[in-house]
Each structure stands twice: as structure tokens, then as C-alpha cells.
Amino acid sequence: MTRTDQKSDFDIIIVGAGFAGLYMLHRAHEMGLSARVFEAGDNVGGTWYWNRYPGARCDAESLAYSFSFDSDLEQEWQWTERYATQAEILAYAEHVADRFDLRRHISFESTVDGARYDDSTNLWSVTVDTGEVASAPFLIMATGCLSVPLVPDIEGLENYKGKRYQASLWPHESVDFSNQTIGVIGTGSSAIQAIPVIAQQAEHLTVFQRTPNFSVPAVNASLDDSWVGAFKKNYREHRRFHKLGLSSGFGDLEIEARERQPDAMTAEGLSDAEFDAMIEARWEQGGAYILGTIADTLANETTNARFADFVHRKIRDIVDDPATADALCPTSHPIGTKRICVDTDYYATYNRPNVDLVNLREEPIIRITETGIQLPKRHVAFDTLVLATGFDAMTGALLKMNIQGSNGQKLKDKWAEGPRTYLGLMMAGFPNLFTITGPGSPSVLSNMLVSIEQHVDFIISLITHMRDKNSSRIETSLQAEDQWVNHVNDIANATLFPKGGSWYLGANIPGKPRVFMPYAAGVGVYREVCDEVAADNYRGFILS
Image: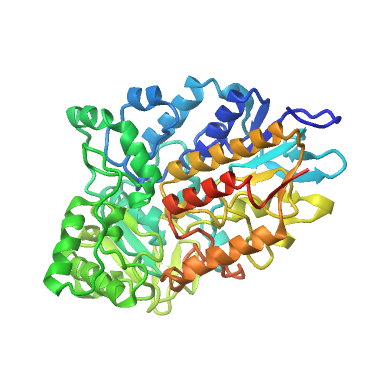
């Protein structure tokens, strides 16, 4: 379909074989386009290929964290738990790749280290660490939002002589912590899932916490076959429910799907007893969408503080030692402004006699030694060190590659003061380059599968529009980009999100510009915006 006189190797090059890359590849084949995926790992799965740490699970309901594009696929695949494990999600990705015969179009163990757009040919040239060079009119970045692990800059890390693991680059073979002393640095989502599992195996576990995070119970359980059967009879309606953005697409537990739930109440006028009763009901139900219980939780500081106080009281009820409980209560950010964690027995783990918490606000790390961690007044030794220190989120994977757009413009220069996109899909000056769930889209504030499908479908509609117009080049204008960036900022500033100091803002990376990267209005509103753009002859996109 390429409208160019220059020969290219493929119609589309896709970077990444996670869920975004797999669905993009599938849709490209449906259009009759030749496509090649370059994937750094030796298997499909993306984040679920790399993140194999103990206790790794999804925080969206399994029945929602799955593809909706094929009704037979959703009926035939059987999830076993409310929140699927990493192994089960990886098996699902492998099943999708095999069912739709996608593997033969994927180059595994192939890391893209450069991409350059040629204005004279309207082709992208992509270089791979294997030495391969490939070209295509379209370059699709399916690199994921959480795919570049962050190694902490701590003095002496390279001198540590014991075993060392990074949560986001976990070994493929089983790791046994029996009869070992363990040190874990970090208390983000990965650590909150891993710590209870490691504590069950280890002789002793010491957790080094800089900033506590809010976590709510998952209330995970095996899925009942009869319940799932009844749920799946309404699967199409549930999918529509998720796409509308209710619960951010994370899922629901009702047999009968409803197009919309009753509007959530604001906290105004609610007594403390009424407020607590509403949160308690969701706490008992479990899941991240507890934040949707009170409508103004993420917009009103007073409501947010009442919500945070509820969770603080829960932590103090669960954790026996008052000093440990106080250290585990987050006070530096409004609840929900960092991605809320979903756990199984996280807080209760600190009641185990073999678990200690080091509050790094009071005892900062001086250095890592050959055998442990030196604190101001003591040394903590352990056999194994686990780093659960997060990611260079949203932009890390894209900026690692040497991406050069029109006239040789470098993406790292364009984004020097923070990422700028139109709809999270395109950047001005980078024709025919699309980012799936890029900065400026709902992405990490949503169920990623819902956002991935919507983005891929929109990209396909743009390529179809180009074909209908006999066009070879599509880009966005600086004006459209500026307007969208301003809109994303306006939406974020109407919430408490900018007060979170989170990786949503890049605050976990020293020197990274502080820009709120996701679109905070939700997947439903975002979908409406994209539909309006398409209906208005793809407003903001320029064909040539």
C-alpha cells in the first residue's frame, strides 16, 4: 500500500512484541500489510516476559485485562484467578501469538538501536543490534510504558558480593530464598507484591523503604467456573462498559454488565461514618477501583485527606508495631497520585518475626558494601539483594533509541524539556511514526489492554485514511501538538496528580523534566476525543 517509488522491506516496522506489538501486527495483517516486529527478548509478552519477580500479578481483573477484538478468543481462554499471575498472562500472550500465527513475523533477540526518517523517500530506516537494517514507510513504537528498569545510583552497588536481582529483569529460572537473609530496596508496586512471597521463604527479610506507598487489598481468589460462564454470556456488554472508561476499564465483578454506574457521590455532606462505610465496602471487595468510590477523591484535597486517613487507620489496625505502622503510612503525597498498589497480605507481612523495616527517611543509606548496607549507625548484612526500584517510565524506551525524524531532528532534543505529543500518538516533526499508549494518552492510568486496542485501532484507521487519500506521509502540526499538550496539562492541573511526585511526572529520575505524562480525563473521554478528531477529517493530522 506504500505510495512511494522507493522499495522498502516492509510496510510497517513495529518495535516490541508485548500486547501492543502483537495486536498491531495482527491488525496490519488484516489490512494485507507486510510487517516486521523487532523484540529484544526471546519470546513475546513484553512486560510480562521480563517481570517474573515473586508474586508478580496484574492489578486489573483478568477478565478485563485481555483482548476484546475476537469473541472466540475471549470465550475460549479460561483465566484461573481474579488477578492473573505473570506466568498465566505470559501464557495468554503466547497463546495469542500462536493462535493468530504471529511469531514468524517477529525477530526475537533484536534490539532496535536507531531509527531515521528519510524525507526524500518517506521511509523509516531502522537499525538493529544484530546488524540488520530494515526500512518501512511506517514505524510503530510498541515499547511499553514500563520497560526500562531503573538501577538506583547508590554508592558501592557495584561492590556487593552476594546474589543480586532486579525485579524487572528477573531470571527465568526459579529463585529459592530458603535459608537466606534478604535485603529489598524499594516499596513500589513490584516490591509490595514480592515482599510477602519472599518473606514466606526467607530466613530473614529486611525492607529498605524511602517512600511508603498506599496499597489496598486485592482480595484475590480462584475464579468459579459457573460464575465465569455467566459473566461471559454478557462479555460483549462488559467490554463496552470497559471502553466507556468506568473504573478506568479495570473491570467489574457483576454478572450483568451495565452501560454506566450510578454517579459516584462527592464527600460533601457525608458524615465520617457514612464516608467510612462507603470506603469499607470497596475495601472488602478489593481492587484498585476503590479510588472511584468518592467522586472527588482525586480533585479535592479535603476529600483526599479523609480517604488517606481511612487507609492510615487500616494500616495501624493491621500492623502490630506502632512505629512500623507509622513508617508505612504515606504522608508525602495525596492518595492515588502515585499509582495505587494492590496487594495480598502486604501490611500483615510486617508482623512476621523474620521481617524488619528500615525507614530510610530516618536512617538513609550511606553506601552498599560487599555484604550489605551501611546505615548511619549500623550495618545490615544479608545474603541476597533485591532491587525493586522501578522504571524510567513512559519515555525511557523511546529515548534510549536514537530516533531522528524529519530533517534529522532528534527525539531526545525535542523532548529535552519533557515529552510532547498529539493524542499520545504522534510528534510534530516525526512523520509516519506512531507511539502506542505514549505520553499524553491515558496509558498507565487505565487498563492497558483497553488503551492498547483503542490506540491500535485508531492508528489503523489513520493508515486506511491515508490509503483512501493516496497519501504516503502523515504527521501532526506543531499547533495541534501544542494545543494537546496544554489540554493534558490543564486536565492534570485540575486534579491532585501533580502533587504526587511520582513517576507519572518523571520524579523518580534525577534530572528528568517534571511533566505529568498521562492523560487524566480517562479512557472514555479520550475515546470520545479521538472519535471527534476522526469525524472532523482527522483534525490535527496532515497528509501529503
